[in-house]
Length: 206
Image (cartoon, rainbow, N blue to C red):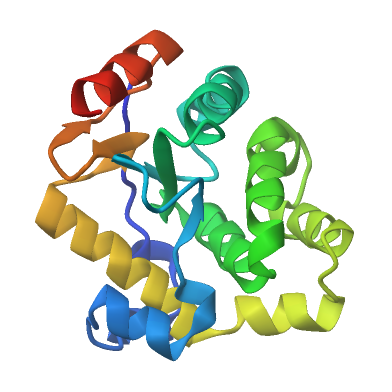
């Protein structure tokens, strides 16, 4: 099942509504290392897979826990797939989490994102829980200071960049929900996949 994108700007601060202009992905990455590609595997692999995901998407969380470990061990670690993480936050909580994840050193990104997805029911949806407080605690465990945490959440440049990339994906690829997988820019699937379905897509392109 696909979770549709929610309106991000409706509850955003006025500054978010101004926009900062849409820059190309390459220029954005060159200007800010936080926007560099976050990926696993060999860039020379025959199959490149993009996963457009939201850190508050329950379907993304289930894929991460139940399917991705097998994808990692059998397809990524064996050199068959270069796996690219692409932000597509569905709400303000997911956007904040994506900002924090990207502000961490690149070698901590994967572990942090997978930890957020694995504990999503607690930090994002827990009863009587403040998601920002929980996110701050998890960021601290990943080595981020309280000062850097606050500075990151207040960074409109980073916020705009993530949202601009999401808007680009929505316009160019017609993505409007998560998870969405793109295989070698040739095939796009907007639903959860089993390992068998995922591997079949890879095999067809190998």
